[in-house]
Image 1 (tube, rainbow, N blue to C red):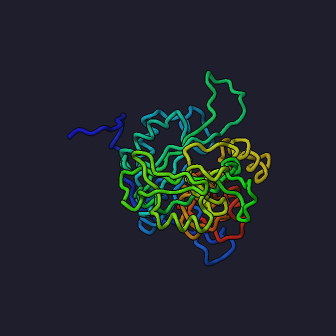
Image 2 (cartoon, rainbow, N blue to C red; image 1 turned 90 degrees about the vertical axis):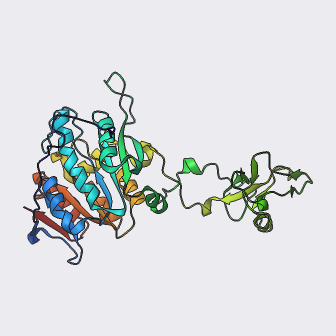
Image 3 (cartoon, rainbow, N blue to C red; image 1 turned 180 degrees about the horizontal axis):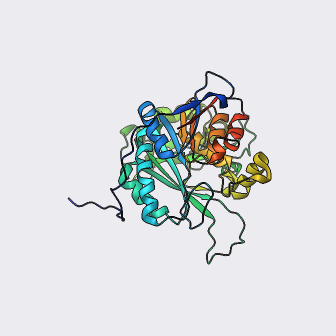
Length: 374
């Protein structure tokens, strides 16, 4: 039976990767000798193959920021490849990353318009379209100064999970911003703080008989659900809410009842697919961070802001979980993972991983970091 797939020259001809062994360079360890964080200097394909035996099914959150194939030449990554070559290089790495994910795990991939649509189709094929979670748009630029025909102000983050239902149940909410919280007010000086009214009705599709009853407002008006609707709670629950002062009948005490929800009771909000720069940072944010760390000898043109990585790790993992980044760059993912109490593995091909920059960024937090090589 034919299937929908992306084809290119060289597809399916990727060379087999033989198992490799990591060599531990103890002279470059830092901090707590009981920690098991790891930096690996070398080709990430070979490194991922070496990790497979011990870490398959163990990684909770994978974030990668691979070369975007934009047509420019980077010092440490060839970012000017023919499209087929780029796809052929991504395939074996993505397959190994998927094997490393735990059943509760998810993979997050940064990309832009140059290869974004091709990568989406490729990931659908490799990971399964049913395992697609979202395509997030990150606002990387806030200035309107742009020389393109139409200014590109965002990049994408593709998200896939081993088991989407498990991911949905276990993913963490994000803190509510003040902009989102402005609907919560306290016009009556409620000692419990700011609140908002929430409709008490629901669709009647799967309602029970206990969700159909009359409600009499303090002003005397009687309410019943409109056609196709029901009350969202049973009458017994409604009476309990009424006794607790959790029902709002409007300023005139004679309007349709609503449930009172206090801001202090809201644990957070479900992540959206639009991540504005004022919430997770932008290109200028990340450049200032990297300048503060490495000074004028900075070699990274497009690092990601720590706020962006922090949100990803927060949503996808919990303290103690293992986070992996196989295109580590300046070490942002490893540094953020450490500050958030996660374990991490970072893989970087550039010489800066072995010499100074990655080690300086991760070592400054006094954890133990193993540096492995071939």
